[in-house]
Length: 90
Image (tube, rainbow, N blue to C red; front, side, top):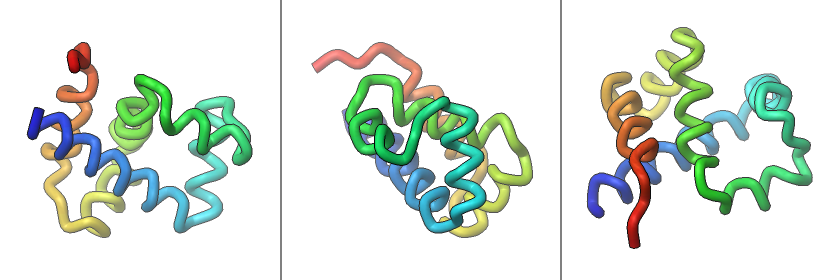
């Protein structure tokens, strides 16, 4: 459970990172097919946070920029993606 919470915090930090740059956010929205108005609702859906991390893992330069900005090892981001990819059981 702790690993999942830590992974969710990383994904939320990633979403914040995207949101601070209109170009990055726009690219994320285009890739997901979401509009800015749909983003808040989508953020609460299962699978959304793993999708945020997948977005970073699909682009090495974006991954490295997020890792540097948040002072986190890129491997930790990949591990967080793996944790969030696992079925969630309450």
